[in-house]
Image (tube, rainbow, N blue to C red; front, side, top):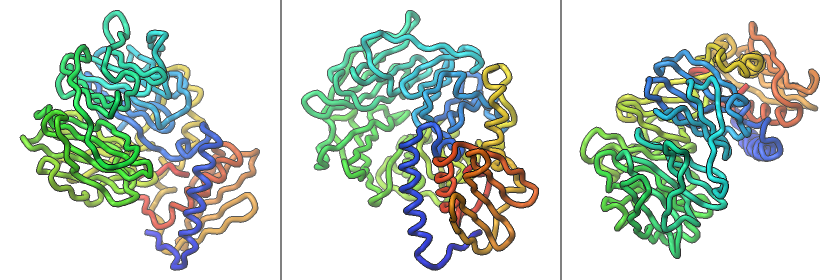
Length: 452
């Protein structure tokens, strides 16, 4: 494992790198950190047992949830280029992807895709949820709720249609939970798919301009609700109700600077195990119905949590956690890698549009699938940056060179036996790779990384 230099220079460099990557991502949506770091953003397990994962470079299909996987390129489902917004749902009605407002459907396991037609008067689709019985979407500008039926998408009526803020489905086949605003923040529950609603006020938290997001409902105790309250300055709190939203109480607040991304209930006993995921801290776990929480040792940092049967998945990235998708089969106590770039053995040949793109994508992430390149380095690592380049070297002989030359691309070389590959776009990618090299210091490559 690397040891960081003792001086404070590295901290300064990391802060500068973070600012640079934020500016670079804003400047270039397509050439961003998402194209360099292999990360997962949503996961779904279909009726046939196939696992689908939206990742920074497209959609991954894992037959019967095995490690071997196939790649489906973003162009095949009409990507708008915003990987963080991609949501996949594998359903009896088809395979659905929501990508930055564009909703598409495949009826042949992702080989071909068609755009879903919604009523002309509704706005941009921002959320897609489902149970085994139905699918729903939430739109903005104008706000609306819609349910997919045999004849197409049908708009539903709710008391807060003009100011909806979040949508969750389940645990019952027709159960919906919506947060929004009428004259004040409200919680809306439906047990008939959205045809009728029960309305309750959201908690008075004392937080100015609080934003409320529905996170989870207990699978056996449907009146148990878990809500995230986010302040304008980014401070998150977890609130709970055990009476379907009639009353609320504060349950958990992480340390300042630690976010709450997702929560999921596990149906293991009456009280239930509650997992709360964070991209900055990891995963907190409660085994007493949300009364007390503890941080799970060595848990991954996750941006999503999803439960399918006895297995729980966490969306992560290979740079931070060593795998893009993590899974747990022991109620969140331990986690293992479920998907990394090295698992993607081939392009899905039925998605013919993707075949010509596979070589470039493979090259972009080639070092990530080469264990020779990613053997854990040791000793100290020194970083220097010159005119248009950044050199990273370790005392065991490992090295990485990032050069803005070679026809405007970035050439990455790491360890003997690895092939350098031009990747990405000139200046933006240069800064992003430099940023990645700064974060790499002190981190152990324990599985597969694709940050380079």
